[in-house]
Image 1 (cartoon, one colour):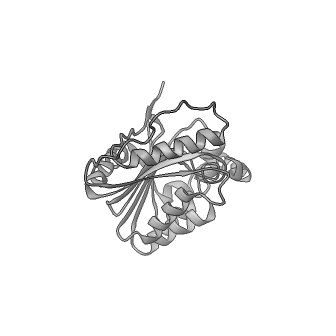
Image 2 (cartoon, rainbow, N blue to C red):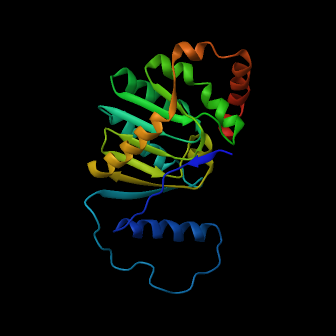
Length: 230
């Protein structure tokens, strides 16, 4: 049985109040039972040197702030875009952003699953491999585990870790929560984890991908029909 690959994050400092606020708002919107009266927002205490922000999104909002923030970071990238994600079924804007970054010389590297518990998402995402590879995006598939990690690292200093997948469901239909961290210390930790996953992954080359069996191509075409709801 395959084990999972995931990343946990412990946050301290003023950002905890942001998380608390998002939790209370979501609890109320989901018609949760009334919470007992208590001090939910004690005075914030500084902890560490990194700038940290909590960002939430829900299907009730006109757009996903997490998605908009990630796109902005990719569009601003100067040296590297390193993404690890469990479910990859990108929309046109994300595809364009990744391709544009690669074409302007940014090292765009994706670590994606080699197997998954969502057949449709898996093959829908694979349907974009050829396009991305032709643009210069590097793709690696994590072997031996079920990939659960959802991280992004831009230029080694802008990082996000959270629940958001790179698919339509996360950006349009789900409640999601991410932490965005700005700082080189945390960036180095994320890069170390990224390098470890990359070393345990198989590189997908354009030459190799063009030789994939016809049955995989049919699966990709079928899955793409449903990607908006995946």
